[in-house]
Amino acid sequence: MTGSQGASDAVTSGAVTHDEQGTRKRPGRKGTARKATRSNKPSTIRDVAAKAGVSVATVSRALAGNYPVSAETRARIMAAVESLHYVVNVHAKALSGRVPGPVALVIKDITGPSLAQVAAGVEQEASGRDRLSLVCSTHGDQDREDALVQLMREQHAAAVVLVGGVVPDDAYHRRMSEYAKALDAAGSRLVLVGRPPLPSGIPATVVEYDNRGGAYQAVTHLLTAGHRRVLFLSGEAGLSSAEQRRHGCRDALRAHAVPYDAHLDVPGPYTRTSGYRRTQEALRVGLDFTAVFAGTDAVAVGALAALREAGLRVPRDVSLVGFDDIPFAADLAPSLTTVRVPYEELGRTAARLALDREEDLAEDSHVILSTQLVIRDSVGPVKRTAARPVAGSG
Image (cartoon, rainbow, N blue to C red; front, side, top):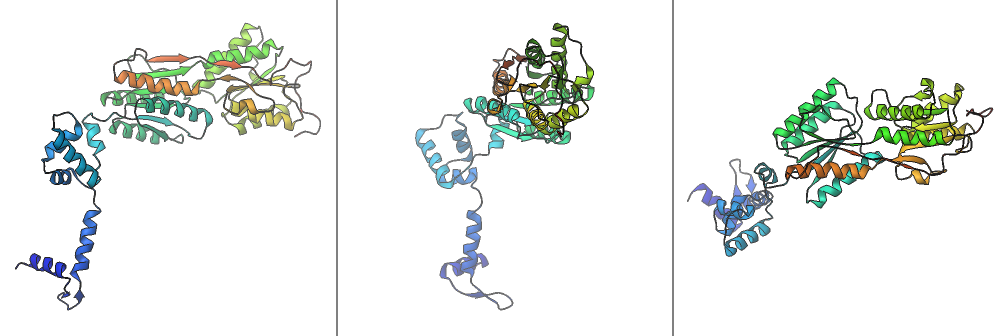
């Protein structure tokens, strides 16, 4: 009898044995532990084949569904798969092209309401086509963005959707061109949302919205109400969306023969805190204005807080317009007049164009969605005097 046979018999009988040092052992327990360890390992395709009594190749064909297998054989294989809780190697299937690739959304911050709406649109379109959608956050880290794009390329994503304003300098165009070419070589597609287009010949899809036209509508609405001193809380210098909105603002001023005053154009981040501080500073230095055009609704909320703190009422003393039409804009007091951006539709369009292109159905690679001025209660007729803080205000 061999040593292995002896161990087997000991396990079966539950006999107590001794090791070389004379220590008592219960091989039955040890054997049971080994068996439990083996059962914790994931089942393999070989396990399925052995249980079904067929070859590994037959199991592979049956699961792939691309080769004729008899109904009886398929039933045995599927019963084995279920009893063994076998999970198909999805990565291997993706490499073979049998699993539709996911749609990956790469954004700076997932907490902002506007970007969350874009993500919702991507998810709706992807799920409607039985595709997985992934949301990845870069936190503004370029190296992380590089790594995420490469990861999605390796995962054979159907599309990588990048969202958010940028500074479109030469370095940005080079980086996006590298992304687009690398993804295209892997059968994927780069989709830019809310970003300017790349040079011709770069394999990328661009989905924009009309920043310039939206800003033109907003400022025109204020000018029509009689305002001539409009404080523009613009975005950070060089940012694509900020520059487009600045052009729209100046277009409206020009159309109404109102001179552009650089002192009234105050750049800064698209945040509530920035809107509050910039408005507070404008009041502190005595800058004359009768209306505020905020670059985003978040900036408008900050401006509203600063105006109230200074004892100024909206719209009686100062009119206010935002940009985005985030969900709670209508619930502010007063409800905020703002420019509606179709963020969910941006997401849906981005996913649709990418997936249509994968199926050779897409015709467009550059789409611009319209914006719309939503008139509510935060704009009123101009008063004779411009906005100034009341005595003793902060």
